Image 1 (spheres, rainbow, N blue to C red):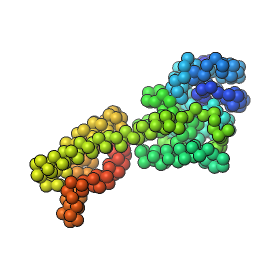
Image 2: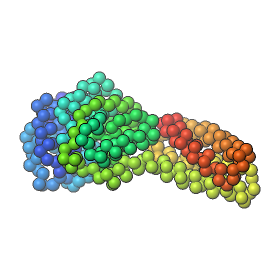
Image 3: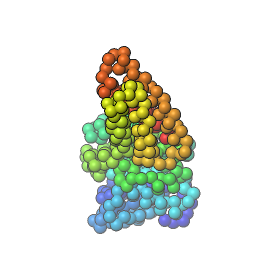
Length: 342
């Protein structure tokens, strides 16, 4: 890229694009916006399209093979930072015609007003929208809010304004394909970014055939971060319940004491699993103090509920732990998300 002063750059990851990418680049260049396109291994058959955008004044980076949207975005950000270290921000846009020049300009305007926010294009999903897109976004929206406590109407939009100060951190985020964009949202707090949504036009052409999103494979990658907490909780519960039954059946201890002993031992396993595999390994030394403050509180509440339900209602001591821990699971997730690991 030419070494000239650039404040804001539009980044377009592209895999086997069509004329819609060229039309978007032409409109952006008409507004004198610098454009960087990443050819994500599209192959020689698509080389003329990329040469056409180069003739418009766009810069093109290339992958020899398809590496995924996440990797293409990282490649573009890396190239942009190498050329313009003091870049104010990068706007990512899709190559399939879903994002208009007018909406990109709207994102740029908000970025200048809110330089510490991730500015997202928000589709209203009104009109003729493919069912898989409408349903998929609705499910992800609610799961994301549960996972993070952050309200986001359109989690799957590819139109995003990333502040310049956050660009180096974006290169270190895990994820090579569509899950990278979800990881970006899941790490907002650690990146110290707020979220700002800007309503944009909802465009789907030919049932969104131009999208390379695989509903099963890529959705699994997107949800994997969230499901890791559930798996961690299931594994920890198995350890916890086995210890509980051992104390109850083999040692003959009171249910509340069995609950307390099992929870203390299983918490060691659960903390390490959540810190390293679910919420991230850089939570800080205070996270262990916050975790055990929560664990002690949860232990007292759980032991009390187990004893109360067993003695007052006559529920089986072997099974009363299950409904108690189901309730505490939901409470624990929210508190670990917002208080322990943040």
